[in-house]
Image (cartoon, rainbow, N blue to C red):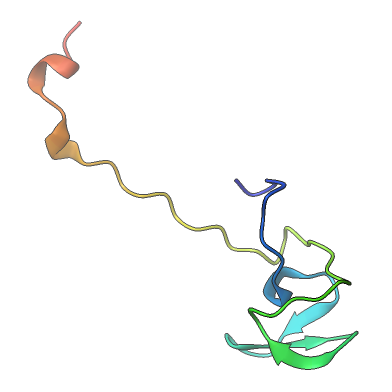
Length: 69
């Protein structure tokens, strides 16, 4: 979920950071850090986080009578 409370803190989607590239973030508090790092000043910014795509459903698991009324 995008607004779930159990999101692990990462500098990649912290309000204090700005992405330099895929691996580094420029943090106001700590300078240039890894995008996977975090600190006590973490503030979640949902606009910076790209959620994982859900796994596709397997169509082969369905049978003909699953769609019958």
